[in-house]
Amino acid sequence: MANTRGVTLTELIIVIAIVGILVVALGFSFQDWIGKYKVEAQTKQIYSDLMNARARAMQFNRIYYVQSVGARSYSLIEDANDNSVNDDAAIAGFPKPNFEYDITWGVVAMPITFDKRGNITNTGTISIASTFSPDYDCIFIEQTRINMGQLSGGNCVAK
Image (cartoon, rainbow, N blue to C red; front, side, top):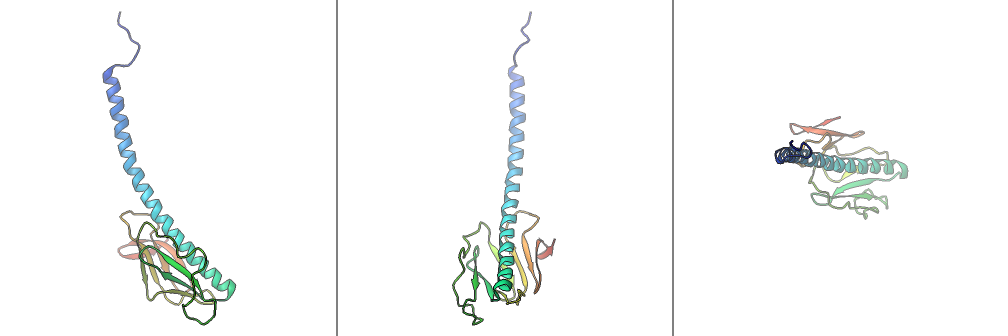
């Protein structure tokens, strides 16, 4: 009488092969997902800081500047002496530490300037350079509006 308890070597090899295939497939999917997440997080951080600059400009009735500091960082500057010149120091917490992906500042002129009413004097787009396709990887800036979007054919399509 044959012993029917236990697992044969063939069954064990098949199960290990299936688990290995699933781990590899899910690993690549996870890397893509985490890359998209990081680009979106960076885009949302920049968007949040732009909205913060706008709110501060209106609240404190001062001009605020968002200035590029290298390819992966930026600074928020308050015109503390009210001379309408970008000659003051950055506010606390800025410049931001270097991000993981390059920031492309496609605005007409730097710095991005928020007047005392929160309006933006120079418009354009800010995009994040990556090989992923996240839902949000650019910011579209107009005089009275800031929207996140997705790059499509070199244009930022607001979502």
